Length: 212
Image (cartoon, rainbow, N blue to C red; front, side, top):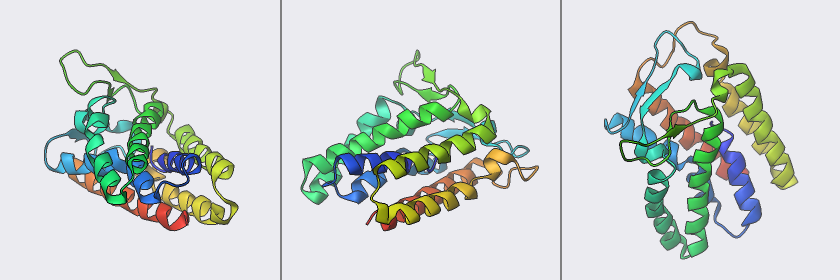
């Protein structure tokens, strides 16, 4: 999931309006800001099929530090403490952490059964409902989810920037769901990781500019 994570950011900011927006926007993106760095450092692994552009063809071989329910969210307490100190507010740190937890919960809907639960141990389980197996449906469902949540919780003055900006970012990812190209234009794990990092940095900046 990509743009859908920022629906969670909107909900958290609506529920906790005094929370600094950067803490929430970075929080919902945190696992996918950390993951590319770990992939490029060789600490986590993903397999990209160069002959298939669809998201469902990705194989997340190992990502316990960034995308496990228990370990990654325990590690997320470290940046949560940084945000708490930065804003001199325990609530800012807490909401950052809740935002990071929401990332795993939303990924659970779209990923195949590859999301680690514990993130350690030989008997760890992996979960995932696998909506990405239906790529066109997944594309439509994600933006519909984002739009409905934004319409429900965002102030009216923010709607144009959030809805149109979100649609543009979502559309940039359309090839991963519709397969307009025969081959994967990314091609390698390193390139995919770098694209993910750029995409989430751009989306975080867009959300912060829109939520004002």
